View 1 (cartoon, helix red, strand yellow):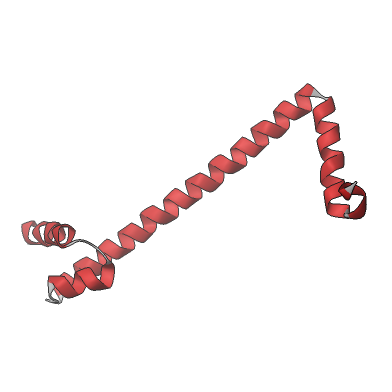
View 2 (cartoon, one colour; view 1 turned 135 degrees about the vertical axis):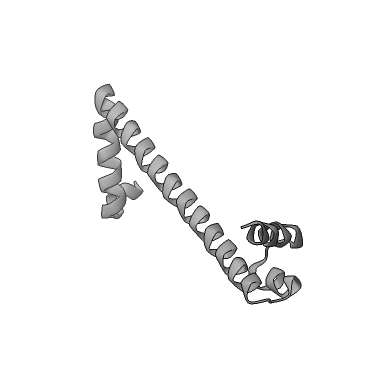
Length: 93
């Protein structure tokens, strides 16, 4: 059996055996795994939002410097429509 040859696999296999014998332990394990996945997804989404904010702030800064919207679109990968909306926000302030 492969678990006998690799200590990491053996450790995981032993843990699986222990968890599967006790329903309460299995439920605790599953809850912990779900919590970890939820946390990681939340961190990923927060990073994505932060990245989007940074890109939009960069576009606003370019607009305030008078940079052409086509250059801003190329630099930030925002659409022309998104940049026009940012430009309108700046002009309405």
